[in-house]
Image 1 (cartoon, one colour):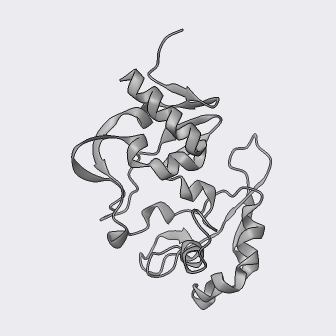
Image 2: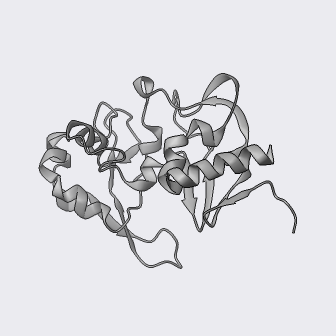
Length: 196
């Protein structure tokens, strides 16, 4: 078998793009333009009901035109070969005319779900959907990869230059740990160092 540079942890293949070292650093929250929130996100089955449990608190963080819970989610197909799934709706972004954004994105570009989670000490990721919480990593069909496509969003700080090289899996430790668990993340570190 040809070595493609990946490693496997807990039956999950880690793409070489997650193992590579790069001179980047995570986004700057204070300068964030929420480019990663310019679309909705697919949800796990348990996420929409949990968000609705906190509906009152979420509504309090949203503008009046986004407070109708019946418009928060939409059904669709991420792939024409898959069964329908539930995702978050998108609306016009009032800060960036002509662009869409997730229905839960506040006008100040903070996530209402994350704000409610922090205010109520719900831990990480709280109400934030799994696929949002692991970004810029993504997990699909048993493979973890890095979404390094820069959004078409002028001024976005999704990937900023940094001095020195660091491994992507180290930069996004919390995200990788959400996918693999603490034990899996330790195994990833060990395998990545051994691969060198």
